[in-house]
Each structure stands twice: as C-alpha cells, then as structure tokens.
Length: 300
Image 1 (cartoon, rainbow, N blue to C red):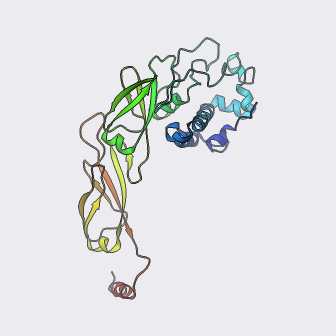
Image 2 (spheres, rainbow, N blue to C red; image 1 turned 90 degrees about the vertical axis):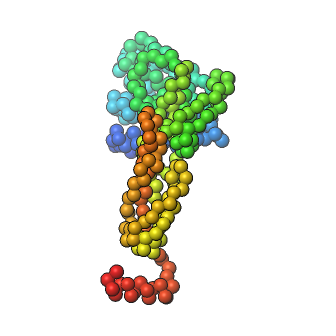
Image 3 (cartoon, one colour; image 1 turned 45 degrees about the horizontal axis):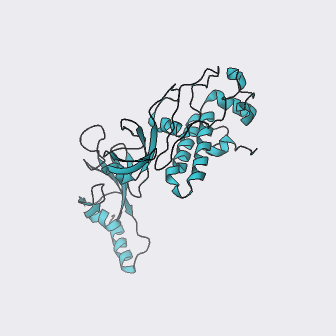
C-alpha cells in the first residue's frame, strides 16, 4: 500500500499553523489544482485536488486535527484511534467512495443522507472534494444531511464573468446550452432548475476584482505626472481617455464611477479604481540631467 502524504505538507503549512493560515493555504492550493485549470493532465489534477480537500477536512477540524497530530493517518483507519470518536472506527469506508459523474467542463457528485453508524462524522460528505470547494468559497454548511440536486462547478475567464456568456456543456451525456448572466463572481451559485452551478473565476492580467469593483494599476512617465496631460485607461468596457492634473503624485487613487462589473443581484455597475504609479527615469542624457539640476536649484 502506498504511503499517504503528510496533510501539512499537502497544504504547504507548518504543524503550528493557525486556522486562518490553513484556510488561506487551502484556498490557494484548491484554486491552483482545480481540474478545470489542468485540462492537459486532468487525472493528475483530480488526484491532487482530492488530496488537498482531504487534508483540509482533517486540519480544519480541531478534533480531527488533534487525532491526526497524535496518531497520523492511522487515526482514521478502520479500528484506528479515531474509532473512539464514534465507536465504529474511522470514517466508515473509503474516504472518496461516493458516486461521481462526468468531468466535461463540470465536476459533480450526488449524495444521500448519512447512515446510522454511530460516528459523529456519519452525516458529513467526506467523499466529495468539490463539495467542500463549494462550501469554502460559497459558504454552504458542511453538515448537510441530504442533497438531491446535483452541483457542478465551471471555470470562467475574467471577461466571460463580467459580460455574461453562453456555454454548451455535456451533462450526463446530454448537450445543453446554458446562459450565465453578467456579473457572476468567484463562488457565485446559479440555479438552473435541475442543477446548481458554482463559478470558479480565472484571474486577469490587468484587472483585479472585489465584488462589483474593479482595480487596476497604471504607470505614467515622470514628465506626465509633473505637467499633467491626457492618458488612456483600460476598463472592462474598453479604453477611455482621462486628463491628469499637473503634479499628480505616485500612489494617487482615482475612482471611475460606473466602470466596474455589473451588479449580479441589482442594478447598475460597480466602480473602477485606478492607482497611479510614477516611473522615475533611470537613464538620462546630459541635457536632461542639466535641466533637472536647474529645477533642483530652484527647489523643485
């Protein structure tokens, strides 16, 4: 039997890590290894993703973590030390033994109500790593007793989430076209009647997002910051031109009202916040240096 990896090593945290550090590490690892981001080697990503979620389920629970710290993986084996928690030995069977469906662009699992094995973990769906992924980012309770509606997750490009998009997907062998509304964000859940869709948002090279607000950094030349002038600012709706006032300082934050993402559950849009960084020239001609010396002598 292959030796299981240490849970702390899987999440990349020290054994003394706090609960918040474990949560942050889980979020980072889960986003990095979500199979929708590794279409070239989905099998390996799926395996790693399950390991990450198994590690988080243990280390995020103080009772389980304590047992793991004392006895290691054997604490959760049938008849192991964790059997003292419920009298039935561990978690009752294979940790990832629930029925899972097609991958496609989606991942999903059906679960049924927990059995009566006497374990305090009996109602916990330990077998669905994508379920805990949704719980962590969407806030669902991990102690649900039953679920009849399948849940799916899908990765969207940043601009697809901003603008909305139609996707053709395969669900249980049947092709369907789904319409995702503008403004969905990381962890958004959409009810499509016979299933629920959770959104996994990919990052963007320029834009960052916080709810409906967009953030961007712009670097301008020293001369433009000093004299002022017109610049182009990227927005999710295209470039716009704005005028900078003379003497703009590095670190200045500008607010562009209504230039953010659409409000998913409301009207209007968020705002775009532009942080201005001023580039100080590293190489100057002799003439430029002389001009700056003259300014320096005048106290500018």
